[in-house]
Image 1: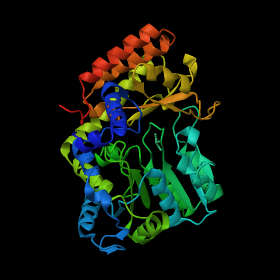
Image 2: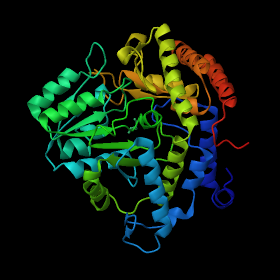
Image 3: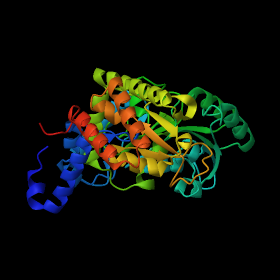
Image 4: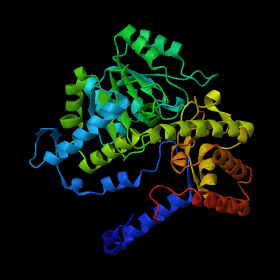
Length: 416
Ligand code: DSN
C-alpha cells in the first residue's frame, strides 16, 4: 500500500508503521484472535467515511448528510444477514466488549443473574469476570469444563442453571477448542426461562463458512467481533431475533455508544462480501485442517492439549510437563519471531499474568496460504526453541528459518 502523504508528513509515525509491517511480514502470527485483512478491507478503513458523524440508524440519523452512510450501513447489514441467516443485525458496535455490554444492557438490569464460562476454563473477561464491567454490574455465576476431559460439562451447566435460575445464559469462549452444543444450551435455558446469548467472536468465520454449527437460528442474541476468523476490520456486530431488534439497537445507541465508525462499517461490508465467496469456505476448512495437523504434531512431541485436540482454529497447551510457564514460553517464541498468547488452563494454579499454558491458532497462518506441511514445520520450530531456550545461537538460527518460511508466504497486503 502506498501512503505518500503520511510518509512525507510524519516520518516518526510512518517509521513505526513500516517496522510493524516488516514484523508482520517476517514473523509468524499464531495468536488465535488475529488475522491479516485483505488489501480491499484495509483500503476501506482508510477512507473519508471516517469524517462523518452518523449517530442513529439508517433513515433515522441525528445529523444531516448521511445518505451515503445509510447506503454503506444498509449494505453491511444486508451482507451480515445473508452470511449468518440473521433476522436483525446491528453493525455499529466498536469492538467485542462494547458489543457484549450492549447485549447485557438490552436484556438485563444491573444485579440480574447471568451464567457464563469461567475465564480460566476458556471464557472471556466480559463473560462475568470480577475485574470486568460484566462481573461488577451483573451477578454472574460460572460454569466450567470437566477437568478430566477439558470439555464443557453440560450436566454441570444444567445443574447450576436449575439451581441459580439465571436470567441469561452466555455460551462462547476465547480459549476453547471444541464444538459448542448450542441446542443443549438453548434447551437448558428454556427449562429455566433464561435468554440465550452466544459470543462467537473467535469462530464467526468458521460458522459463516458452515464449518461449525451456527447458533444464530437457535439463540436469542449473538455477538461477534469482525476481525478474527471473519478476517475483517477491528469491530463487532450483534445479531438477534426481530422481536429483540429495538432493545438491542437502543442499547448500542444511545445506550452505549455515540457515532458509529463509518469507515469501519464500510470495511465490515467488504469483509462480509469476501466471506460470502466460495473461497472463504475453502479458507475456513483449511484453518481447521491446519489446527488439527498442528495439534497432532504437538501431541507427537509429548505436549498436553486441553481436551486432547481441536474442532476449530485454536488449541490451548498445558506446558506444566515441559517445565515451562506461559510468560516464559511467550518470550522464548518472541525471540524466534513467533507470536503466541499465554493462556490459563482449567483451575490454573498460576496467575492469569503468568499462567500455565499458551494458546495457539491458525487463522493468520492460513491466510498466508500455509497448509498442513507448514504447520508441522512450525511445531518443530516451537519444540526446538523450547528445548534450546538458553542457546542464543540456536534461537537465532531458528529466527532465520522462520523468516525464510515467511518470505515464501507473504501477507496479503505486502507490496509487490
Ligand atoms: N483478546 C481477544 C482474544 O485474544 O481472545 C479477546 O478479547
